[in-house]
Length: 204
Image (tube, rainbow, N blue to C red; front, side, top):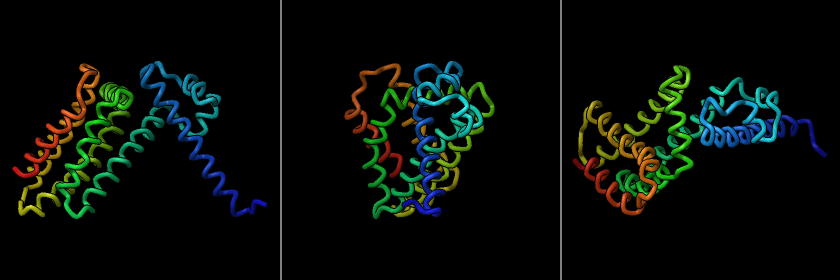
């Protein structure tokens, strides 16, 4: 028998399940159709819901994008936190290079992220969402770099750490475009070269 205490938890779990279902459907639609062609009606059809049901959970498509970006941000912040908690921060960063290369060469990931960035270039509301998430990522990455460099005896200025963070971001985010322009890239070969670049950046 379900108690009254269980009802709010069940409702919350159902809400999270529905939201996740909508975000998955919206991500698929944005990848395949682009932001503007992916209507709420199409997202609803893909999710197996009515447009009214979609609006019950998200005010508009911008809110859906915000939730997608927030999911990715949460994953990245968790990743940098895990690296900072490692016994050897620099080694932890190097160990995650291969996965970072693989993730950014994934055509599904690339299509979605590039579509969001493209819309951010046209839509100030999306630009604000993307820039806010990027700032949070940079703060986490800079702190990770500070720890790794500090353990190695380096004392960098904030400007130096910020520049290193930008180089790392440019390296990995650049793979999103390369994955489209050159789908035949070898992830293993790239990962080996990326590890060298990251090591040089960390030690230089």
